[in-house]
Amino acid sequence: MRLLAQPGCARHTSPQQHGNMAAHWAGRRLSLLSLILTKRGQHVPLCCVYSPRWKSSGPSSLQDRQREIMARGLPKQKPIAGVGQVVVVASGKGGVGKSTTAVNLALGLMAIDPSKRVGLLDADIHGPSVPKLMNLKGNPELTETNRMIPLTNYGLPCMSMGFLVDEEAPIVWRGLMVMSALEKLLRQVEWGSLDYLVVDMPPGTGDVQLSISQNVPVAGAVIVSTPQDIALLDARRGAEMFKKVHVPVLGLVQNMSVFQCPNCQHQTHIFGSGGARQLADTLGVHFLGDIPLHLNIREMSDRGQPVVISSPDSPEAEAYRKLAAAVLLRIQEVTV
Ligand SMILES: Nc1ncnc2c1ncn2[C@@H]1O[C@H](COP(=O)(O)OP(=O)(O)OP(=O)(O)O)[C@@H](O)[C@H]1O
Ligand SMILES: [Mg+2]
Ligand SMILES: [Zn+2]
Image 1 (cartoon, rainbow, N blue to C red):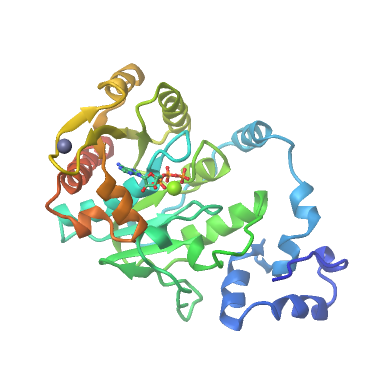
Image 2: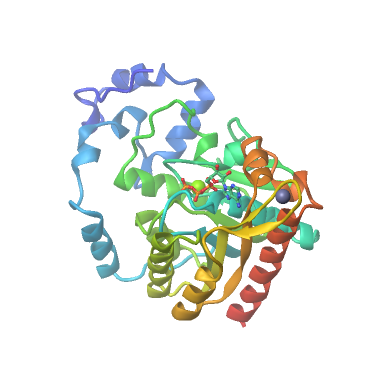
């Protein structure tokens, strides 16, 4: 696939030039992408996304950008149509198990109360995980009003950037483009009516986290951390960012803390116990629970069969259901 910025493209001149680019994309795929890539209501053809103009614009560092966004004041938060409580799953650091936690938390919420309607939004635009974890792929259908219908597996409706862009496609979206895609993932999805929308956040405390916290009323944030000190420091950064933007921190989950032997279920605290509990105390946030480090969690996640569904009787599935119950309790506490 050739995705070169064409000379006249950034100024949106010749329709033929855009037509050339469109030829690289099948019709429906293009319409979905162009639906996402809009700037102030105008369609931005795909070729423009790759224009150096987009890459070079904007403030030099993330900190500058964050300061600039904060300085503009908090934008008015608008609920997502049909969605009750939004719960974000976040961490200061990558690879701590946010996506695995988000997927099993969403399924855990459904498991403990089947009457509740739950959805899952993958807000990791650069590295979406939900398609693989939920064994879903393909383009969402569009409603008559051009809203995207989530893909559903295990009864859980899901939306992810991964449904809209090929896995091999280079996702070199930056700055405004990311925000524009995010806006569409937040606003242009036909969720129907949901009690809870679980949002799998990208790692860190960047633009996406700020943007979601500022544009959508978030019921609370679940911070995922592993027990190593450095990860705990990052968890602290994550929790503090949400406090700053007035999103209630529902609490801290410690992931991969206890090694559970697949043969005898014996548990070993590899990193020592209590790190996240202590951090939760220091930060004045709740401790929501421990998720064991278990081969089954990794293997089943890789196969797109989350443990809450594939091994509902296992201790690890029980850990996720307990987490879901703790999250529900905290939502009630923070929303009274
Ligand atoms: N409790 C667990 N036991 C065993 N493996 C786990 C556990 N939690 C997560 N993993 C594995 O760790 C890896 C990273 O998990 P995951 O993708 O959920 O992290 P992440 O925080 O979402 O990463 P990123 O920051 O890249 O989005 C995956 O291979 C996943 O299967
Ligand atoms: Mg992830
Ligand atoms: Zn053993």
